[in-house]
Length: 100
Image 1: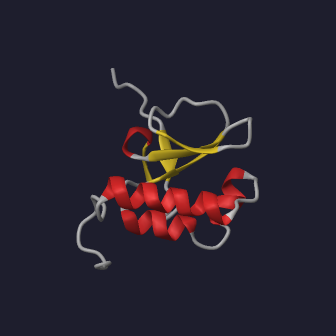
Image 2: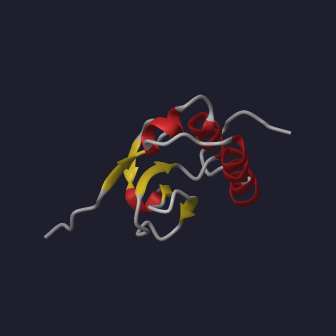
């Protein structure tokens, strides 16, 4: 018997992947924006691939604002990009643009 695997869509590349392969960003009930590694924090969430390209695409414009139903300030976006740059190191997807 096959077990159900939850699927989610990446905000950056719009590909459907297994929930465990993606990183969740959550807007907590207190109004804080957090990276949710466990995927279980309370609040409205959206998902991004562990690739720097997806984070850049997902954080530009107002995609994240729309997905989380909030209005983000510049500081929050900078903190998310800093997290991505520190933890993702160019991403896990194959050949892409070189940044640097």
